Image 1 (cartoon, helix red, strand yellow):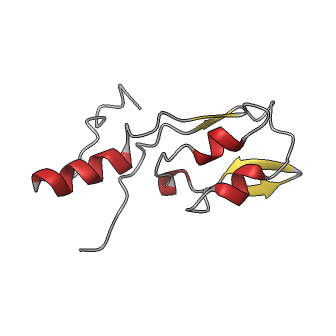
Image 2: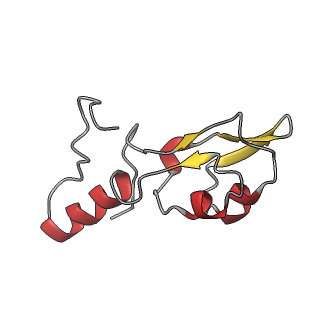
Length: 96
């Protein structure tokens, strides 16, 4: 079974006004979620985010926010463990 991500469930948020373009998030993100544009980091592939929290922990300017384990990664793991289809329970958009 090939791993796949759920669309539009990542809790990743960026406060672009706080970003200084240091590039730490690009260095530590294991799934290339970020790119540098006009001297600042931007979220380019939000659906690639596994909510590991590495970007948040390494951002010296507190420009990023994520709730680790509440979205896609957690849903996929729960699906594997229970043998069910992955679901983040956010289909109505209320918790994402």
